Amino acid sequence: MKLRFLPLLLLGATACNSPGTASTAFLNPAHEQDQVSTPASAASPGPVSTPAAVPVVNVKPAPVSPPVKATRAIGIVWNGDGACTDGCIQGGVTAVNDVGLTLRYVNQNTPATTPAQIAEIFADAKVWVMPGGHSLQEVQAMTPALRNGLRQFVANGGGYVGWCAGAFSATDEVGTTGEPGLGLMPGSSKVFISSNKRNAYGASIEKLSWISGAHDFYLEGGPYLYNLASSVEVIARYPDQVSIAAARTAYGNGRVYISGVHPEAPIWWWSGTAINDPDGSDAGYAADMLRWAARLE
Image 1 (spheres, helix red, strand yellow):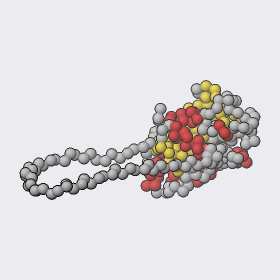
Image 2 (cartoon, rainbow, N blue to C red; image 1 turned 60 degrees about the vertical axis):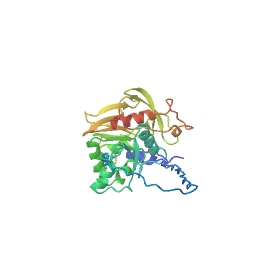
Image 3 (cartoon, rainbow, N blue to C red; image 1 turned 180 degrees about the vertical axis):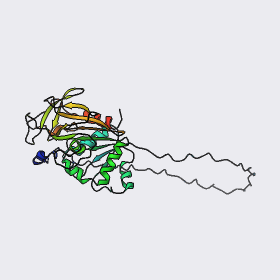
Image 4 (cartoon, helix red, strand yellow; image 1 turned 90 degrees about the horizontal axis):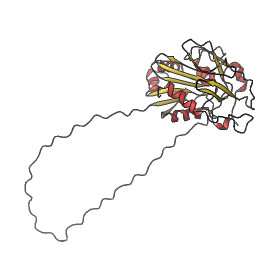
């Protein structure tokens, strides 16, 4: 059974689903060693002749190119406190893989206090993914240096993608908790109360007016956005055609893309419950959010 944080919804500290932490398997291929045979000695020794002198030729060695440092584009997924472990983290991992980035996990156990440690966290990174779960816990589990480092990373050209709790975390205030958020999305967030049918977890399927057309998405305690700066681009609205469900904006030289719904949601979140998403998986929308934020279009 999936872990929920339903009582916390009224505080604006989102209740979203999360993943089983994906483990990475390393396969060590077997190495075959060539068998070298030693030639047999001649059957009988014969007279030994002195070889003719061979002139010495000075050969200039070919120039050696300096080693080329391998570069890889990284997608960071927060898998620390607050991120739900019942599909949310894995949804972020899947999106990172879908856009061809190399996964890097960061959590409260990642050293993140000195400038060198912060630089190591964001080295070669393209985007930071903040999964669903409990938004206030996510933000408070980050060191002040890491929060500042994340803002600087985005301002310098990186991307930020947040779903549900990750959307609450991105605004100026974490929902309506009174606690400061990351301030990456200039505006406010509050739990969206749906009038649609819900399952036992309080989740519903919402038909959003997305910029590409109407589409159904999974919602579980996610926010709507309001008081957004004029520079913010509204991407989707809830069925009331007023409440903002998804938005994106520039932050310095970087990009921020958040949604109250879960485009990364696995089908098993609603399968066999009282609700159903007729569109099926929305993973393509999650990947598109990463592509835009990381400038991989």
